[in-house]
Image 1 (cartoon, rainbow, N blue to C red):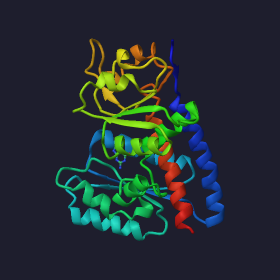
Image 2 (cartoon, rainbow, N blue to C red):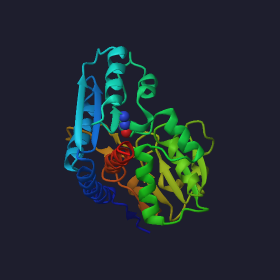
Image 3 (cartoon, rainbow, N blue to C red):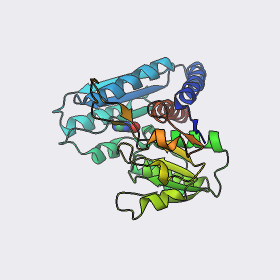
Image 4 (cartoon, rainbow, N blue to C red):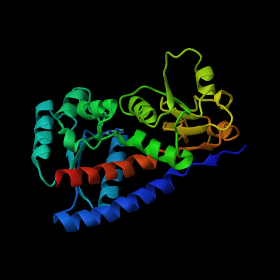
Length: 290
Ligand code: GUN
């Protein structure tokens, strides 16, 4: 079997287009553009790349992008004051504070300061709680994007065995909640799981979000499984390469021979995250505009 490649890049482009059309409608109705504020503290190179991509995608979708770049030594009080100012700003529908923050700042305290109604990342405990009890709120962008790819491919997930590898608050836990809401039978595996290959073997759906290059092997997979690879890992440069290749958490080349469908890295889950962020911002705009 050669697995079908799940084209997250194409799916994300369609989603961005749809959000763009709705953003235009919002602007006509509300008399202003939907607005996303992104806060970056410090100069982490990967974060700078993400923030630049978010800005470009926001503007391309016909929304207002408010970028706030603060020096690495910004105090927590100053950052919290900015968040408060953005909470009160009627032109700002969504607020995203890029993580990780420099070590002297407390991620959780900063996230807690964001109004849950503007928390388009879905990281605030209020939104995590809403997801846990089945109330509507903001759902973290990466797992929501994974669900869109899964339901597009599989339709009804009811009764399917799903294994999520990784238990982070940003991906693993919300992913498991979403799969459970879709009536899948869900297992969360992690670094202490005994017999990870055995656990993965029973899965119709595997979501890998551990951040370890090519850790999930082809032999672990059930024949015909659908594999969603959230990992983005850079390998050490090979001979003659300046930079190492980007790979996921799954051995793609091997898995292709066993799975029925798999997301590539890059071009799979990654592009979905920003598209869903725009979608969440538009939802926030409609809610905030009443
Ligand atoms: N850092 C890496 N991914 C994300 C994300 O989705 N949101 C935020 N706020 N920070 C991140």
